[in-house]
Length: 357
Image (cartoon, rainbow, N blue to C red; front, top):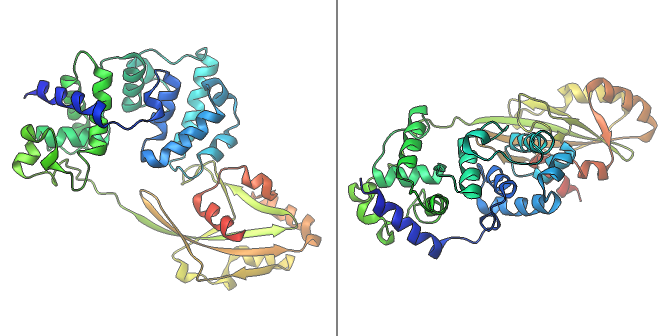
């Protein structure tokens, strides 16, 4: 296994082809950690504006730690995988308040932080302090699987161990941080998932997948994601200047964000407002109801496709006291438009509210 040829080619390719990204021009572990958390499950083009907003608002880990979680969630709005934002905030508080504002100084110690797994720990340790530890993400899996002909399932526990072992065996003694950046960038720009330009690839002479015609087959990922379909009927309830919302709880998507009262249905085709439990309760408040069954919204997550529609309900101000009692019993709380704007909301709610303007 000619690893020297492999690493030298990547180290030569990287400076000529790398993208200029802000987290590559620093050794600050806070900035590197922030970028790596944000880019998990997120394309660079999508994550970069969020990174810039976060860093402008929270230039230090202490400022992130001191911010209300509601503000953090609002800035994260639209980026998805919201547990990352909650873990980010909790981790910042641990570093700021328990560790004197200093990140642990090694890969092993970084693993003790909340929300920091082997990939993020390796990235911070490598890029901040030059520790010789391999960074293994989806791009690295793909490059290693194709070049070295590794057919172990990358989604399996055994596969992750095998690839991490290989990655740490071939990482060079010097310029290990540069090499880690190089192999990730190579996977992102050259050895892409679909239709890579193998004829012009600088590694094609030694690439197993290119030689054996197995580029499409590698890497192997046997476990397919099962996607469920869900239908949400939302109720946009206004009484005077107040809008009723609820906080999404644990054990479901979008934990910590706010959205409207909602009924989950088998499908949107089954919507029948005459049998809605929530609308039945609201009849006592003489609601003005607006509903367009054709105005549907769709949001696609990794494991779920969400289809939704909205019922707009205006309650006359004279029912405000009764509505307040009813809302408190249901666990809803009132906000004005400015307050709602400042809180994190699912993309479905953001799209719907934008259409109301």
